[in-house]
Length: 366
Image 1 (cartoon, rainbow, N blue to C red):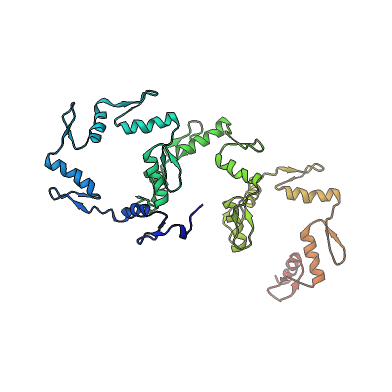
Image 2 (cartoon, one colour):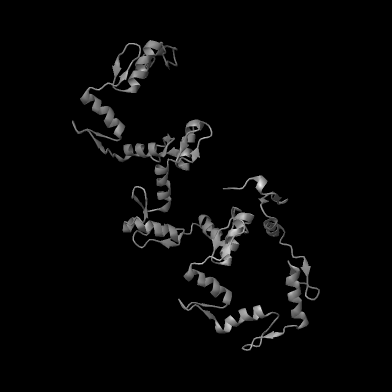
């Protein structure tokens, strides 16, 4: 859960990001300034910290007391010499035989085999195996995004994120399915796609045992069991299980029809309605009447048709108790009682209850 402003009292005066710890703000400010205020008087090299400058000065004084016995290179500290020795000897994992140049890298690697996560984020207490992973994670708290797309200027926390993003601009799809030749931007996209060919559904709902190809689909499915509907319309308070359903619903309030039929250019508010409409162009009629074998595009059309066979007329007029097969027929009938005539002749101004009566009338003017 996100902390509120009261819990983040330290504010960056440059971008107004707030932090819960002064140390995080201090680190964050380096992203804005990148200042190196400590200068070497000998070679003019700049450093961010005084301790870095002091260590550097030893290289000018020739004060390198520690020497590598292999290549005779000199070092200012034993820890630097120890790391350097890995270049010559290497540090080998006794489990998988992988070699490392530094003992610290081997130590971090061993956590993979042991399962240990010795490094802790002091902000959210999350544990990590490697210092680099913790360092990258800290950018979530500091808000630092040092990698910028030079095309659209979007910022990223990691270079890998920027690399993937650039494929949107270049159109590069380097991962190819060897079966159907479909290409993907990410290797994970190809991995998930392969389940279509193998038939694998590795993600199982522990409640109803239903299987899914994608973890995201399982996550959405779980909302059926929990009853959670996290996406809420700010206008009418209706809730939805998916953000895409909320987005489509908003078209009711805005009047926007965002889904277009590429065949006849007709616009629709809902993707599902467009999908049903496409059956008209494709000639698909999957719903068959069991009595007369007539085919229909939609189940609702078949349901309405069945009333011809059953004689069912479920829509009753509250005024005269006349009954109808379709709600539209009842609606049109109610105009007789209300006296409304919504169809207006544009030539003579005469009004009609039904559109087909208006059409017949228009022949008089033709």
